[in-house]
Length: 99
Image (cartoon, rainbow, N blue to C red; front, side):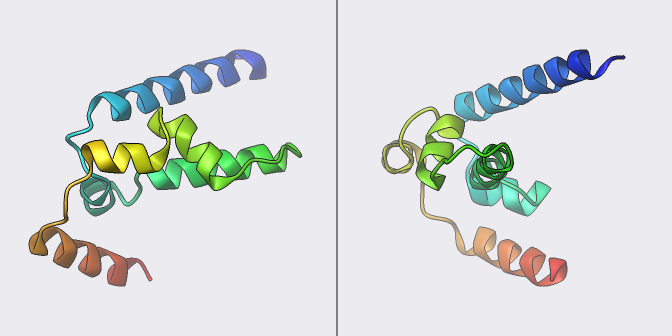
């Protein structure tokens, strides 16, 4: 496989992942962090870092809007719920284990 084809496939898979996360607003970021160790905000940070590596200026908010499909504050107001004590405890445990 040549590099251009690999890049196209990777980009398509990324777009599919982002769309899936946009569609699954019921899945909270804390759930993603607890199960997979990354969330929509992580993807946004990685996207911004990739842009900066290419010499493109991009704010964190701009990157989050790309991943969330809307401004982050709007997404939070529409879809984010308060984390349960169990979710918070799992996050604290997984965060401690990863450091």
